Length: 477
Length: 158
Image 1 (cartoon, chains in turn cyan, blue):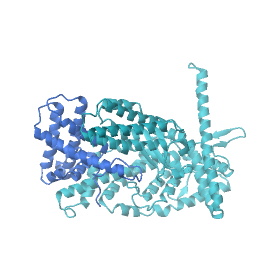
Image 2 (image 1 turned 60 degrees about the horizontal axis):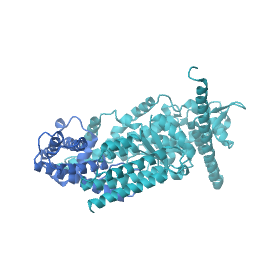
Image 3 (image 1 turned 60 degrees about the vertical axis):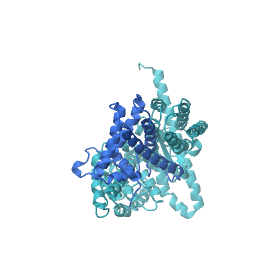
Image 4 (image 1 turned 90 degrees about the vertical axis):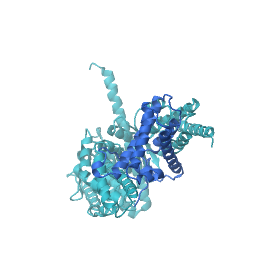
């Protein structure tokens, strides 16, 4: 292909992406974030076209045009899926704003796009830091910096499995993805050279002059294993820290969600999704975290945040949940995951290093929050009463204190009450009436979304009233 | 089990090394812009990173660089896996460090305008970046054909 034809191809690809981005920006979204990002992508393409017209690509090596074209089709165009999947139709729209607010409280100044994906997993990616080093490597660096300045903040695309769109309780896992963004503040405090030396020492014990006599081949093997080990270690610490952060935000619900997703996994002992720590380790670490926070007693596998003076029905709920927690005992008392990761040098060295950090991760997470996002006290005071509302087919959005007085509750308590209902009331229903069970699950999902909506509307109204009151009183009062 | 070598940022280095080839082919003696200096500086850092990675993997403990980043090891391993000339030089003790050092010095001379590097040195640097960029472009082409199983990071095999 001639250079001119390659440049025409690049110009056309930018045109296509811009057209799609402009069209997507008109779709209804539950928040402004996806639209803003669509317009940003449109601006990126407009800038690229303008630079081509101004001759910035005329004197470059042809490879620059080739790699830029591949960058557009492989990285920039697929970013439109974050916008497309974030439309009101594709998301549990009532949950999007409260989740965005949680994210923005945890990561100051960041913005979040919550979107569906067909892949059955939750995932997170920061889009600005993905694009910035690439765009500013292109010709006219200063102009790219101007384009990026308009994006202002980090933009996190958080994905959820579309199949579970209406299964709102499972979306407590979104807090784990938000927690991912806390990991760099922990990992950046580590001395990279020390970590590499530690991993290198372990790998050298396994890749030796006996196993790999050729010097160059050995260096290559160790280099690959070391890179993989470093990535595995960082991924393990990131996942475990994110689990801890999510437990601070949503309490025991994240354990229930973790277990539900883990139960679909091929193995609880292997490294999953290429990089994630074994589920067995994650469940064990989650129990330690919830024990630290006073939600669960790991020694007795019981819920430790349930009121003493509850009704017989609520005492039965506690017994059911304790029985559910008891199922985890054989999982965490077994160490087969450690045998599995020891099978090859990269994972073995990565996990020898990661195991030493588990308590430190929990300590770091506890110190990260200026205020506790969710406490066992809130759970104890709110969840039993919300559960009773659910049992009466009422949305679990508030607690009645008197006939005319209600008290707001946290999103974490709303979702916890739904989990307790799911784990205690639904299994026996399925045994009696499978269709009735499915119908009941749909009702439960609707009640949950309604509770979140009512709770959010009320919070916004109260916020508006506060602001209005402050404006009416004026600055001197 | 052996893993494919990866590179910290495929597109950033694909663009930068490709731009460096163009800049190295320009007639010497002409002033270069601040932006062009920036491109060559980033490429020099890439070469120095690979050099440190090589020192870390080949040298005995006492001779290792005091500061090493994971990206240095990753970059070196990528270059070693994808560039047969680098692999050939790695077999001779000291030859590889001399090779990387020569490229870094050539770039430095152009960036600081501290002397005109000879044509062979420039050709040597240009050939290295051409092989590097071609390898990255090939990997990028494979990316576009790959079915995405799940959200992936920009770490790819040569």
